[in-house]
Image 1 (cartoon, helix red, strand yellow):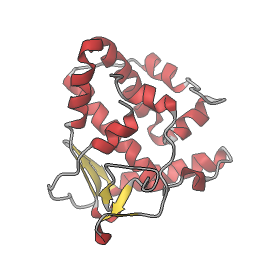
Image 2: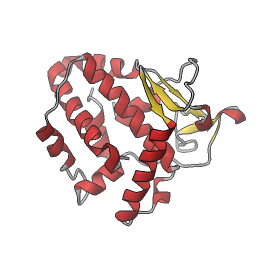
Image 3: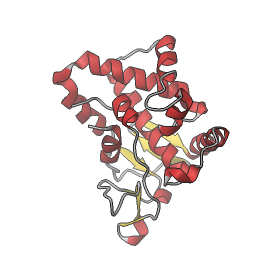
Length: 201
């Protein structure tokens, strides 16, 4: 199952949102200040690469938040299995150009800013090792464990759109409009993200 699909399957539960949090993923809190800092860094990286942020189809803070949420859930899954990643493995992952002409563009396409690039590299390399560790027979269980890590988003983002479609592709629904999608369009998820972020079934 692709990371995007798994990420969208993360169910927003009814636990109270912590003050100053953009999201709470399992036992980890993603602060609004961290999101703002990382979103600003991502905008700067896009500008340096001469890429237009409007091409994402969604606000930068939402795009970055989804990456931070997926990374947080992945880290917690790695901790359960005690997966360790070396600095050289992180370096190798960050140098991978994927489907693009450079590693920098690949990271930007995956929603990764310089401020958390090494953290992403650790998670990406760790998930690859975890896939090998559990083998083909353990992939389904791994996917189920990933989706069991619950996420609560700040009400300012609305409600997570768990069933995106062509007509309704947004990342979040407007909770104040009884499920009406926000007007932004969700970006196409690169195939490279699918390969790096979620065990294959």
